Length: 386
Image 1 (cartoon, rainbow, N blue to C red):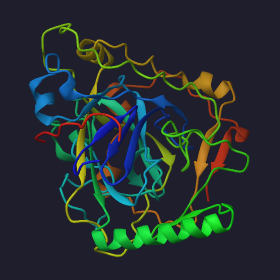
Image 2 (image 1 turned 90 degrees about the vertical axis):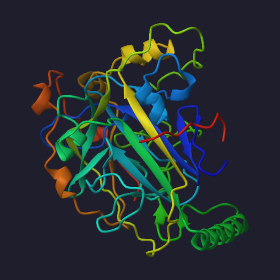
Image 3 (image 1 turned 120 degrees about the horizontal axis):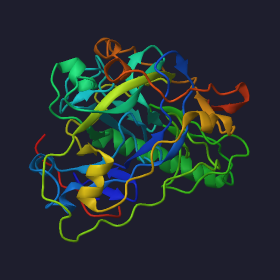
Image 4 (image 1 turned 135 degrees about the horizontal axis):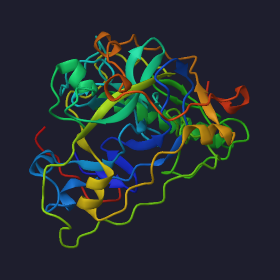
């Protein structure tokens, strides 16, 4: 992959340095209490903005990047499984850092930390707003003040999600690759019986639970090997995954260009999930990002108008999922240290405070439904001015 190039591979965003990011549909949590990690219910389809010059707005084309369709109050989480080399990944929501709560910046910071470390961090379900917990990402329209961006900055200008990746610097990367080469040789010498992979500075990465059947990449789910879920979808689980989206339509525009109903991310319920502290030595990361991308969130009607494609079906009913006995998840890594919650993010109010009560009934999972987890194809994506 060329330097700085971001590509779409199916439903996966591939950033330079081996970073893989998927956007996973999930169940929205109640806004009261703290919950287990909800399951992954399929990937959001993603498309390049530049493939639709006649139906996207000038603002979208200026920022470039990609777009995905999301319903009002639909929840999502970011899955990082499949990332091939250590990386520091910044995640912005309306150009507010989802880890530190600070304004978006083109540089890494450790005090407070404004990035997640891959592959140590297998996924991110929400903003870092509590000790050992996050508040779930939930889609809301701009203009109400309900987004994280609006509540932290007082303005709603950008919306969407921003990603920026930093690889190890040349010296550290060379050391890590040599360690990986020696480890691979040792595994071959042992007949491939090793059960964990050691990444310098990151500790052991959890492998699938005993008896689990790994899912083939890139359609993996949540825990590290594969699995989604506001937490995870464990390997081998048969959840209703979204069907692959059709190829982009290049026919004549279905409607004149207009300003889209822009969407951003607010927060919903709290769940048990840690955002891990960086344990690499200071100075390990490259000073300049290897790649970045702006992810636009559009409403399903806008998605159909822009692309000519049908959006995914409406979000899955939460009570029906639980009644069916399908699993929820709990993930714990004994060797990792949780970051302190970000002060600015801790005061963000849930979307229910802005949009009213949640009418979708809640049915808590039974104890047996909670599963413990763990101790470049495509064309380049055009970046823009954001």
